[in-house]
Length: 280
Image 1 (cartoon, rainbow, N blue to C red):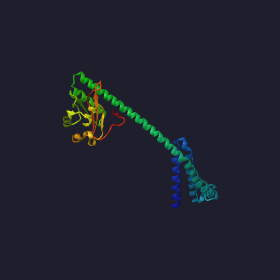
Image 2: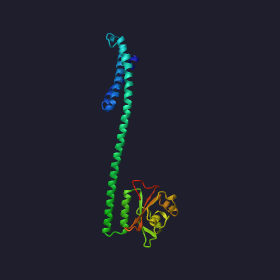
Image 3: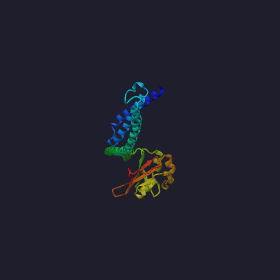
């Protein structure tokens, strides 16, 4: 009795596999259907052999040619059912596995293209938002100028706009004094007051911080790690107190290329400009 139950369970499992493969395989790519058909056929023959095997346990079926305990049934069960089933499975797997690999490569290629397209769309949206933010900031700065806003208010608005575009950046504008030897505080809304007070009146010169060097040379200065850079030897403790780790400084030039001041971008992590930031 136990053998009959196990044989019935085996037949039901094979029937479930055949139905599942038949239903799942109908939506496959055409390239993989040939191997899939052999696999379904192989499981179908195994199911056929199992059904004939179950019939051996019923004497009342012996009068039939195909089912029951007969030589024809034994041939169909062992040779056609089981041996044929495994043979079809082998052929199906041999044909199906390489096609599945090709399909996997195709899916991977399409996934990469989709990711690239998605990345381009994200970059386009981000660029549009940056442009909108920049235009809004310009308009607000122009409004301040039109209503006789102070220079510090205008510079603060421009820095706030820049910080909105690059949230990890802390902006600062220093203006060159009339003597052309020192940098004075212009605006730095996100830097601590003690830091702004400490650098107010900073002497310009090569090697005197990022801004002092930028004002002296008229060129951008990139310091990706304040605590190890020689330009910051005299200011490292001050920068550490303000939790500043990197500073990029860009000279502000007049139409005739004279230095008017500097625009500094501070970061609370050691870093240098990415290719997208194109800091020059």
